[in-house]
Length: 218
Image (cartoon, rainbow, N blue to C red; front, side, top):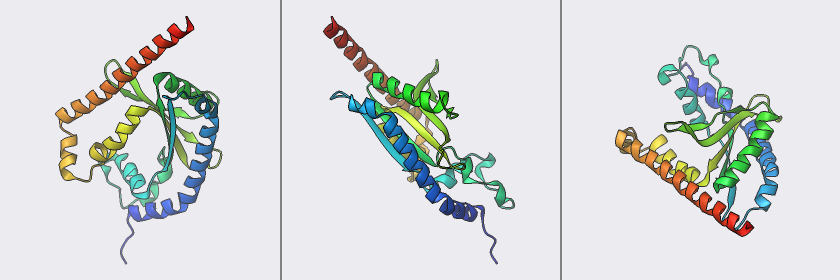
């Protein structure tokens, strides 16, 4: 009889957890939409707060767990020591926000509810020297489940949209040519340049908005 592999056990576990993941995602999405309702109702024509929800797919979850272990290889002799519930983002929300003033407002509300009044853990995405935050992440558990960890991301809209491209082209490319190119210093440098350009653009736009608001107030 062929011995079952770690991946077989994990796929079985994912199947068992799937209904619970969906419940957590539903609760999280409902809670965050309610939390941000007043902000979204008060948006001006050019402002955006868009909420995206996703449950981590089975293969993606197994791959994420594999990347967390030394050598990125499962020990087939001890399958019981691996569990998908250690992942912090089986259920996740991404909140895309524009402009910066709204980003700060949304992040403050999320942080107040989930960190200051809850027990979620902040895990910001940092970049550059000196270090600055590119986006904010928080992970923890909802009351729906004692096992499933969920994640909330608060991200500038331009950065979040680029992440969608970066995920398939650089983070998890299927094309072997792209996999090799993604590791080249020149490509990494250009990617960082894209983020820096986004940050400068958003900062400039925010400065213009602040300037116009001051003039209107005068």
